[in-house]
Image 1 (tube, rainbow, N blue to C red):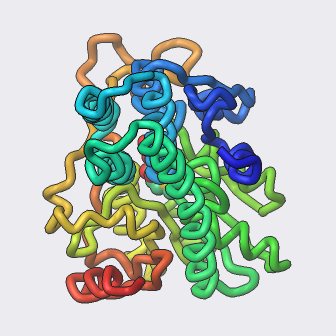
Image 2: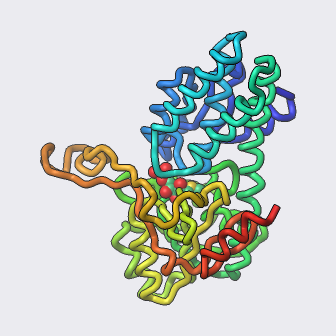
Length: 358
Ligand code: MRU
């Protein structure tokens, strides 16, 4: 890896380890109290880091998966293409099974797998070099995409505006800037005065632990609220726009994002507030016709019963339903903001048009 590329990747929250056989991440479950870096060496450690949300946010999961596949390839020390390709495929399938909803995970793994299949039978040394380039390209492209999304998002805001956001779609969830948080960070750089309300985002509190932390650190005026306070702040007339990220967008514009997002969209519609979904085109899955085709991850009930409490707040055997995401119907979405431009209804026309732009 070139020195320049090394430096660029080392600035990020997900990066290749110096030995190129490991991946280093910021453990997002420890924030905001501790900044802890984890070195992931085995496929099991990588799988667990994604599953347990130590690395999370759709684009960051994709970036991490790309680096993981390269690091695991470097460890293989094989000379035979067929054995290498079979093992590569097995490991990619394994990582892909860690979380089902964010399409960026399978998207990045497919990109890495394509490098291997497109060079069938070639020298493994050459293939490793190409995999090295591909995993860094995934991250570098994400930086550029987030920047473009932030520009488009900012074009929809004016000085003095207050936005409400849900979950965390900032730099920690991506590379730099983030998606839904990007316009706020870019606006700040340009001297604009923008304000934010961050939903705490039950049950895993990404809004409290990560979004309010990132915005506060960036010097942006942020107010943390519980999820059930969103209606009141909207009613008070304090919110000019809602900005949220996405984990998978269907071809008709239905958008899966953190559980509770669809409720925010319904409230926004009620109060006449624009509701924007921001994400890279890699989050759009044309294979899903509608949101009904998106698999929603179900998670451990203890995240609801006890995870962030000093002692459990519910009986240990009480039944829980813990979906990690929900789908916002396209009819509630004012616009979908991507790095290639802003899509508006009818999404069945504006989304395919995006893929014709190079
Ligand atoms: O379960 P998480 O924390 O990975 O969920 C993340 C979200 O829902 C984000 O809003 C989404 O991935 C977009 S990140 C730019």
